Length: 472
Image (cartoon, rainbow, N blue to C red; front, side):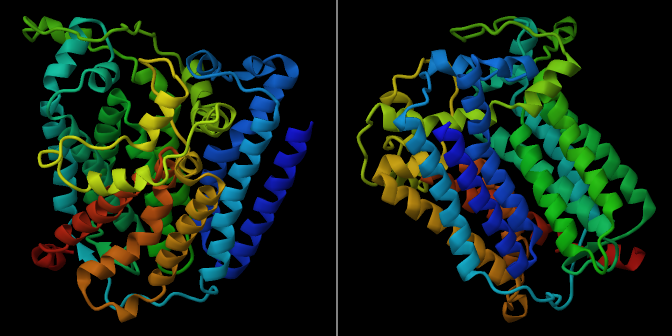
């Protein structure tokens, strides 16, 4: 019961600090972000401790993380797990303490002068055209999946083609374009920061794009992109709308975001075998060591997989493995890995191990299975407990810095940088799930994917608006 007692004390402290942050900043992104961090950091501990005390009774209500014990290691209610919970809790408290200290007090945000007017036609074309190009880049993998009764998700992950990186980047761009345009539209003509043509016919194109883009991404199993764009979209609407926030659009966004999540695990198991009747698959081969059996779609199993997602546990395991197996520290290897990752692979093909690779190798994880390392564990690998505290403090400082910049937009004259800081706080929050499932190296994705790409998309879509403005 010591583990539950420690978890309860830490959770109460985290709840109290969340309330203090809300009272000071009145910023919903902080509250949502802390909830997301808690989910990936400590939420799984409640069920793991329950399972260890009751001989795995979590199975009775849909928990299904147990294969990690065979692939990784067993967790025991010992000193190592007590330290794991403590370190995770201290990591979160460091984030909150720094946010509370550095964030400005709540005050009504003034509009950033004239709102940026975007061209919906460009964003809609980017959604549809991007999805088509993305599918073309992985068409061979799609046909391989059809020929060998495998899901597209399995083949594109375990047997990626030469355009895999470009394919993933395009997928990220199309879902961001969708949500930027959709939120700008439902914010109305009086959007504080970003607005556009409010013609009723535009919404029908966005409705089509929602089904078209999210349906395509579901078949690929790309829920990370949908989750990021959905969180960003909801926060963007609250920030961008003038006057009182209408909860009908928020409810609509929640449905758009979470409905795909409920069906994700079932739909990404689908194999498009019917394609073999119309396309030649001669010469295509499957190079996967362990063939994944086709799973029939089940709403119940897919919904339970979402409700008790293994995301709660896979990263949570990592700190225990590092402490219990006395894994040696790397003393900054992740920092070098991050720096090397900024250089194109063509120029620097041989790169140092990142924290995830080092973790999997050090705990002797079973090969052929995907794992996750927690952000705090990534810092722990490098510098031990001081690394955990620094990692939390650094994240909290960046988060509060973006919040403060969002309240200083009138001082920023450059249009691109103004857009960068309009969305900076929001995309940082939306990127937290990805940060929590990676080591310090994940800041590269934060910079290029979460910050630069959405800013470029908004900026580009605002360059061709004269004709649309006249028609509005």
